[in-house]
Length: 484
Image (cartoon, rainbow, N blue to C red):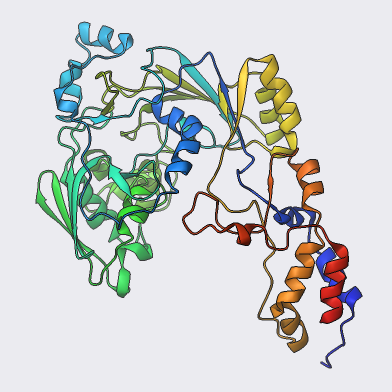
């Protein structure tokens, strides 16, 4: 096909073809304008408070120059020295002989959660909503977050202990991990190295369940090995250095830790290796293969019966509502030895669509909302917050922009490729965007006008990057196009 000459009108038409949503890229998202609405009358469990109130402090802390990623676990407060107490509803069950004492339900050295404002009070129910069809989703994932092997430090610079209390990473190839001794699943069964080995041997290495393991488990193209050292210790070996494994795969919710610690004592009944009738169980459940039933039973979003390490456990599911109660074996305490969580129960309201969710949110039906809110409804949320004694918090997500333009530097046509690769074209488009107008109309003045770069808390941030070509200047934009 013969090449066509392009005019300035062609260039501007190319830009105009971008959807209105993409134009929002001109306004950076620092802080990300997502609303966190929390009723002030509800005492929120500390892990939730950390999400809502600690983000600015964490971002400020992140400005410090980070040390090299530690190869060993940092120290933590000694929970074994505390005198423990529990929620009244659990104390009643202990008195009735339904549960062992709190000292026997907690690990030898429970994780001590930092107190951000004050020690909480036991009791109450928190209500959240989402349009998820599963047991969990949306805001419930913030109230009842998945448990990772490790946690990301508040500074965002490394990892801190979680279910694994100790680790040693020699040469970023040989990793020794030690479980917190005495942690129990929500049904009271102990968490041991056998659960980790079960995940590795019978889930990760089983090609029917895991056809293609994630790249983090096979750096250099070779699958990692995992062996049991003792009842609470495992060792992982990589064929090549894998320094990101601690933070990315153990501490991050989308990595190794997101549900990969599985209760072997419960799941073996659905695994063909341990139950030769697993295929029959699957067919009785209306499924074709054993691994389909196994996958469902291993998914905390799909089954009520799966033992959990989370602060709350699902106990009842109806068409529109999922009911959660506190996990009596939850393995974290506050600084005074009070077993967490503070809240007794969580109600997950499942609604048909986002419009109904917004209507209920504004009407004061929910105690916490944020993951499915929309900045375009900011004014309505603000009115609802005033009426229901709630607070709106703008949450800094850590992203450098809400969205952005991404130019194709690999156009098949030589001329378009040359145009998109020319700095002046991209600079002209940036100068032709009225960021302040978009900020006022879409973000109600809450956004920061800037170019796409890292957030200001990053050690890599430079003001000249954020301020480059952000002024609305059509004349200068045209001059750049004329120069081209």
